[in-house]
View 1 (cartoon, rainbow, N blue to C red):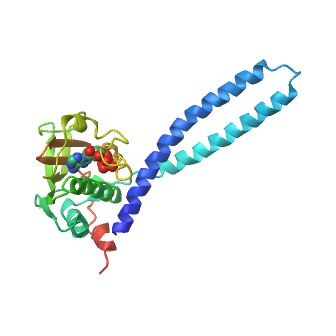
View 2 (cartoon, rainbow, N blue to C red):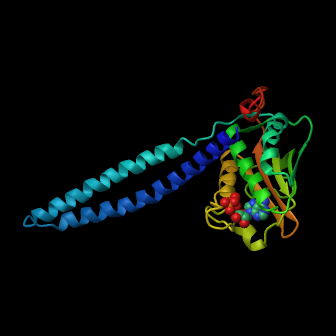
View 3 (cartoon, rainbow, N blue to C red):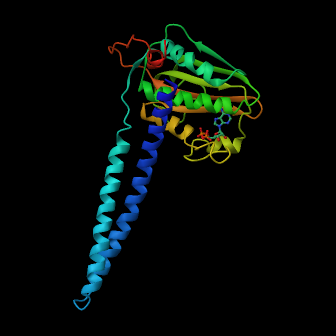
Length: 261
Ligand code: ADP
């Protein structure tokens, strides 16, 4: 299931990347096509050769546009399929394989308030996001430490640390808490920017937290981060409660199901 999660998280990163590139590339192509159109209008009939070159360029730009179109279609496939997810069994399944992955010097603890109502989110994307957050926590504790994953019910407004702009409502707050290096105020301010990383080249993509935030917001919630240098970091996903009347899925989590017996 670790491989499956890694794959899911790569696909998610790829999807977002493809979407961003397709969008930028489309703007570039529009400028190219505009230039070709303007140049063609100024051409006189004495320049058949140049017109042929411009036609070649125009049809290449058109092919380019169809490539970006396909990229965008691919990127949209990362759409979320939210379902009711009961926090306790879900997080127990996650912890079962996350523990060994974290290494011997990291102690993983679950703190789940009993009898929580189900949250509403895309289960496999949520897994991928939490694995990313746990990996960040482990990276922040090179000498080892304690990793806590917690779940509780919170209301907004009325809760401290609620992400700005969070719609009023009842949320499940899933937090990944480490007692590692923490972040300076300058780093904290920028961590959810896409491609922002303080990790050495090749070790960080800088997409983890921006994707986590995007996921939480797309799910109808938000992301909050608290951090102090030398003390540790808490990253919280605020996810909406499942709509009343939607029966929670009681089967084992994906993680448990896919784990080898
Ligand atoms: P990446 O992990 O690839 O660098 P992220 O978007 O996940 O990308 O994180 C961006 C940056 O935020 C990291 O490079 C690091 O500086 C900081 N960061 C993220 N999580 C933590 C954490 N738990 N403790 C300390 N710093 C963190």
